Amino acid sequence: MAKKNDIYLSVVIPMYNEEKSVKKLYAKLLKHLDPLKKSYEIVFIDDGSIDKTLKLLLELQKDDKRIKIVKLRGNFGQTSALAAGFDHSIGEVIVSMDGDLQHDPSDIKKLLKKMDEGYDIVSGWRKDRVDNLILRKIPSKIANYMMAKLTKVDIHDFGTTLKAYRRDVIQSIRLYGQFHRFIPALASEVGATITEVPIKNIMRKHGKSNYGIFRTFTVFFDLIRIKFLLSYMSKPLQVFGLVGILMLLAGGGVFSYLTFLKYAYGTGYGLMEYRAPLFIMSVFLMVSGIQLFTMGLLGEIIVKSLYDSGKKQPYYVDKIYS
Ligand code: UDP
Ligand code: MG
Image 1: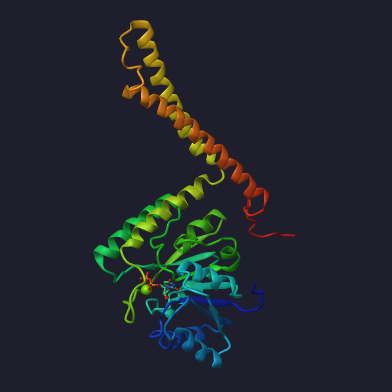
Image 2: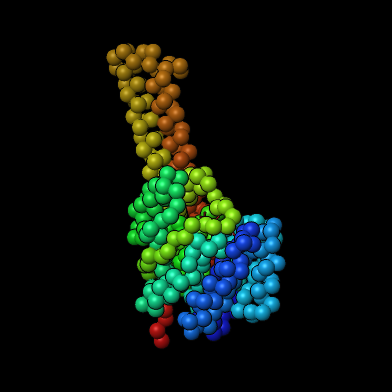
């Protein structure tokens, strides 16, 4: 797609029905990007807006060639919009942010300062959050705590999109689902260094958030997926195989015990019949144990073909000195 040239910064902003914010956002961006004295581009992704967002963006672009607009065919969601923006940006450093004025472009400077210190990802941290306590702040605190613990990435705020990335790091990650909040976790897998800086958090003035309380649940499911992918993707047999063997052993143990009772003492008589709960349980455990183990083996075949096809790399080179 986009080729590398001498642009330093790409600001990537997904827009879904943000007509009320477009002009103000652009003005604020200029105010804070120009003084940086760095070459930059602004990449807007129109994620299938049905209001005047695209029209207003095109108007801005007529007078400012630093603006790039990626219009998607429909509404693919924030993560996919971000992925499209990353793929079509050319800057050495990429900053992603929301287009609803909840992020302040004045924070970009802080992110870039940390990037200069050599980090691969600088994450924004909404230290003083202005959202609803019950619906947003508390669930997000719990989710963030779990994410930090499970992914071993030590930051406070995974959820916000105001973040800066080095281009090669973002290129090594494939995004799908609701995965944008897991970029730091996925990036840590390829060896990126990550830090955070406090950013401003502004109330949404125009339009409504695209998400409700339901997102909290999807985030928890994503967390389980991510944990699994990060820890066991390369070794599925260790998860399924272990559980499978344990179930097989437990089932076999109960079955042997019943057989022993029946033939040695005759007291097991009745327990060994096909309607007896213990008997059913032992058979169930053994059969599912074998199935889980086989699933682990199947998983190993899938992983092998991923590595073989080159879609997954066993290592990621940072730099080559020669
Ligand atoms: N967004 C998008 N596609 C979507 C939903 C949201 O591009 O399907 C954009 C939206 O325009 C905004 C950003 O993603 O720039 C964050 O969305 P929102 O403000 O609804 O999320 P919240 O701030 O409530 O987390
Ligand atoms: Mg918002």
